[in-house]
Length: 325
Image (cartoon, rainbow, N blue to C red; front, top):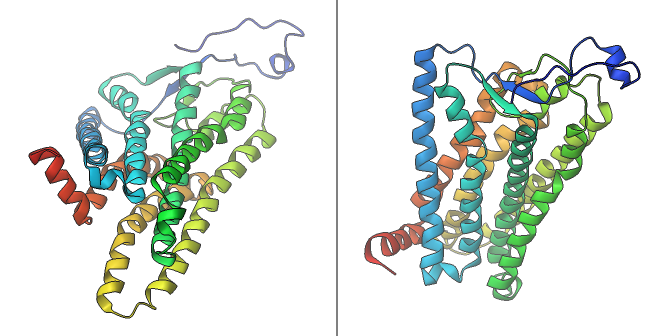
């Protein structure tokens, strides 16, 4: 839906008297306007391949966890199955729309409601991912630092409840700021210099500054990012302290090997997302590139990291995909 010119009447709204531009009910996503048609087609092809491999890779992990009786009982893989399911949903909130816009000759037009639905699901799933990464760090901490109590503290039932809590919290976290931003009055131009409905361009399109709404959004973003991140770092500090006390080098290597995949994913996810939503001015013109990295490439790399570095996952994939369970 494109923008509509709404009639202005005296006393209709203070903004109508303060602005000569029209209020909007739709946005134009500029995407990557500097690219030539050939470059856009090449980028569309590459991202299509990445999207397909992301779905296939994460679906294989979910299938292995659901079908392999050994993995179904282990909290680590219950969390990993949830994480891979989330990654498929997360990339789907942006990739199909972005690929459609890249394949089109004209800039993508998205309705007001469609824009905020994408905004809500993208940030809700990103927050859920942050919480799930913290839950996976908790699982590794309990397994290494409290091995005798681990079966009780992180039973499959507890793990499923923890996963459900992460999903519910993620989808409730940004309800307030998204409602606040959606109630703003947006004036022309109705173009967003991005390939998704990102809060930065949206707030910039508001008729008047909204410092309280902006502060609410970035405060909740910072908590959702730094809270789990600090918890993960504290958990692994305790894990490192426990591992160095192990008597044999083989035991230390085995303990570290169960953590390296998770730490690699943590580094990929938080490294890019902190720049974008905690210090948005620091990313400058590369904001779209950073967003592209953690919204498309990170979900692609996650199944590669977990499957290549995890012998038990590789064996489960062989059993379920090639030999049957």
